[in-house]
Length: 313
Image 1: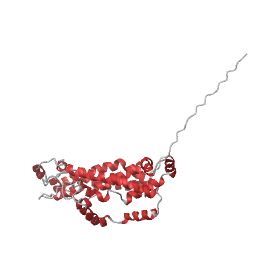
Image 2: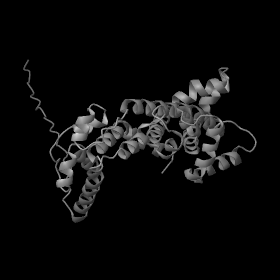
Image 3: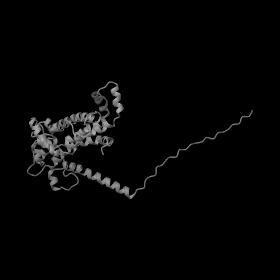
Image 4: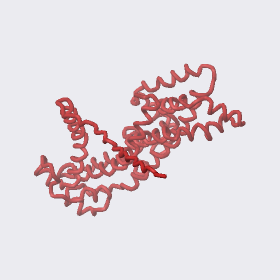
């Protein structure tokens, strides 16, 4: 019996690479990239100029004010800002020789910003939950009236707040600095309310069927779900309270309650006879702004994503 050997030809499948055609450079794209590069350059130039001034000497800045690189590069400005120079060395480098309690001011700023951020998040989240989930008479009208506070300029509230803080005996006190914005703000309530309204009602109804009350639902269910918006609001609130200047200037008079933003003005006021200590002032400004720049840089993408999710354009 003859067996026929049939040879089955092997078929090789070749996968063709899908090449995405490259976009040819056009005049419009070139203009767009040029504009974007110019915007980035304009944005970063002030920070570079602050660093250049901080690393220069005051005498070098007076002799060569337009140089793009640090003049007579030195870290003396940072040493004066941190209080690491003696009086003789500071005066010799164009400083005033005055004492700048930098670490005390830094601690005051951390305490005030942390107190405002923690308390404002808690109370604003509770108010946002009440406006978004609880049903009570006149809720929408009260929220509209509360939201109208966004249109009131901050300058209008400074004098009433100062009178209140003075009557409470909290002038020249860290609690007096934090108290006006420590409980809640219209923006924070509106921001969190937008997120709470996007959470499905079925989540809350399921918790109610399991026997949970409103308070437990808020702290155990909704608040953990809102961790991303809360973190975003925390970063924004911390940066705002850290950079606040005019209100702390009104109510703080001594080093015991003076925050870092006000201390920069005090440092500038300690002017030597030769002129302003621009090197030390820019070094102190850079040190004060560096934590907030790092904080915003780390959470920038999350902040933008959360703002777009909650409907704020």
